[in-house]
Every structure is written in structure tokens, then in C-alpha cells.
Image (cartoon, rainbow, N blue to C red; front, side, top):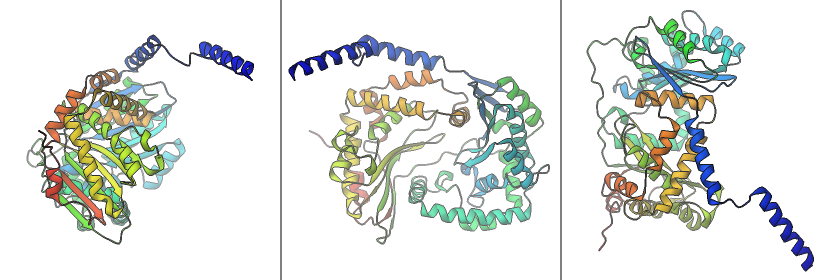
Length: 477
């Protein structure tokens, strides 16, 4: 038996020597160096600004497929109380036929190419994009230009789509996370455009007319607000030529009067509770005002957001969870799941935690969240920050998997920053964050600041707002 063990030990040592199971410090440093080299050697993001003001940006990875899309600097934030919902309505109408193509022709053409056409509307952006084979990029861009510039907006199609949107609104009402975040925006940005929902109120959807859609397109769609983004098997020079060919003659936006560049959206610390004891679980979001896209505090807030982490009961983990809040949630049964979020807009943002818990656990969960917030402000360690930075870098790289994710990243960053931040620059920015940076940003945005609370379900156990506000600071001797 002893001889067998000796042989086994010798074999394991030999195997580990050959396969380097235990890496030396130099080997780990060389791995880190190779990561930096990989990030620096990523395909460049080429950009061109056309005479019309339209921007073209692309990353050619040589893939056999490509994603191309139009990112428009207009969303529900551009609407008024009377027109709230028109941006999303217009997104639906874009696929209902043009002067050149009926809805059936459009669908067949996309189907025969084996392509996918899609769109979405957010509070600040509207996006139309196509996924296709790289040789079909010219056709995809021609179709995108057609649906943007030549949509019929027929009365019968408007009436039919009105019913589709109303059904979509009913479906959203069953998604409690969406409901909570809409409530969160409504109370955080009371009386401002960011406080409205993207879909709009039911009465608006029932009353939106063709003139409303035409006026919205006339005043918000135009080359200065467009970014044509491409990723995968795309040639930048070809994209520029296609942009000139299909969008070169397009004019606009046209205004009856010059609009303000950006109306600031005032943040108000407040709360909303929709108590319904018939529901099995409470859905709660707790947040403070965060930073806008271009703020220098955005990267530290993203690291702080990663420090809070996310957890779900299906993950398990218990005492081995990476973050303090996840460990407490697992060991004490504080919640069914939670996730931290950092939602950014041009000039503001919301930074916080959304969680789902049993009816009588709201108070304990909120207390634990705020304890972690205070630790971020006062006593976070370098070890915790370094771990969060590694997790953040990994997540960022994983999210850029595929042509569609890269194209979305290009389009969004071009609208937010007027350039795409290279990955090695982003890594350097994250690496520059330390515990002191996190504490400073915590003091600036979290410590002794009024939070915003949105809660739906059996929330009787949720602490009153004054108690939650009082836990936004620590008194220490």
C-alpha cells in the first residue's frame, strides 16, 4: 500500500511538472501581459463623419456574418406628456410596409436572405438593426434606409398596431421587474421626461394619430442624429459608400422652433409603494442618483456596482459567495434573488439594487443592502476592490461575444461619447480604481443622500422612508 502511494505521488509530481498545474508568479504575469496584448490588438473601430452629420462606425473581424444597424439619438425622453409613447409606436410601424415594399414583401425579402431584422426603443435611443451574411450587408442597409425614410404609416396598419401595442402593455404589466423599474423612474424623475414610461399611457396609445408619427419623425429623425454601426464581416469603406448612397440626400430634423439641446431631468429622493398582499413575493428597488455616461465617476460606480454583485437561489454558494450581500442572502434566506444595477443616461443615472423576497423579509434585506453601501463609503478593502475589478473586466469582455453585441456597443458608445472607447483603455480605467476611489465616489453619491424606493407586492414589512433615509449614513465615534 505504501509503495502504491509512493508511486502515485511520484506520478502526480511528474504530471504536474509537465502540465504546470501550479503556475509561478512569472507565468501569471506573462498571462496578464498577453491579455493586454490581446486587447491592444483587437480590430480597430473605424469612424467617419459624413457631410450630412451622419456618423459611420465599424469593426471588421472578418466573420462570415455581420450586424449592421442605425442608432438614432432619440427616444421617449424626446416626447411630451401628450405624445408619450410615439417613439415606441414608430418603431412598430417601421416594419409595416414602405412606398417600395409591402409588409409581406419586406418579410419575404428578409426571410430569403436568411437575415434577422429587429428594433428597440429606450428612453434616449431608438435602434433598427439587421443580422445577415457579410455579402448581404449592402441589401440590409438598403432595407434599413427604406423603412426609416419611406414608411407608409397607413391608417389601417396604425389601427392594427395600436392593438398589438396595447397587448404588449398588458404583457409588460405581468413582468414585475419592468413594473418596478417604471415606478422607480416615475418617482426618481418626477415631472420630467425620464419619469415617463417608454410604452406610454394607455390613453395616449389609443389616441396617437398618423400626424403624431409624421411630426415625430420630422423633428427627431435625420442624419445628424444617426449612427450607422457595423460589426463582423464589414468593410468600412463600403459602409461609408452605402451611407452616402442611401442617406446622403436625407435632410432634417426639421423644427418649427429650435428645441433646447438637453433639458436636465431633476432627481427627487422619494418612494412609491403598491401594496398587494395577494401576491406571493415582494419586488423592491432601492437606488440613489448615479452618474451620466460621460462622467468620470462612471467607471468607479461600475466597480462599486460589481462589489454589490447579484445572487439567485438557484446559484447556491452559501458561505463561498464572492460578495457579502450574496453570502448574507444565502445564509439567512433574506431574498429569493437580487441584482445591482447602474442605469446611465446623458446627464444622470440610477445606481442601486433590485430584489425579490418573502413578505416579511423586506426590512432585513434593505438593512443589509444599506450596510453594504456604508461599507463601500467607509471601509472597503483593496482585496474586495481588486476582485470586483476582475469580475467587471470579465463580464465586459463576455458581453462582447458576437457581432450583434459588438455592433450594439459601437452604436451606443458613438451616441454617448462620439467615439468608441478601446478595450485596452477601458481596462486601464478600471485598473486605476482603488479602494480610496470607491470610498470617494461612495461619499459623493451614496452617503447621506436621499434614496428612491419603488416596491410592489406584500410590502407591509418594508421600513418607512424616514428610517431608510436615516440608514444612509453612519455615526461613528
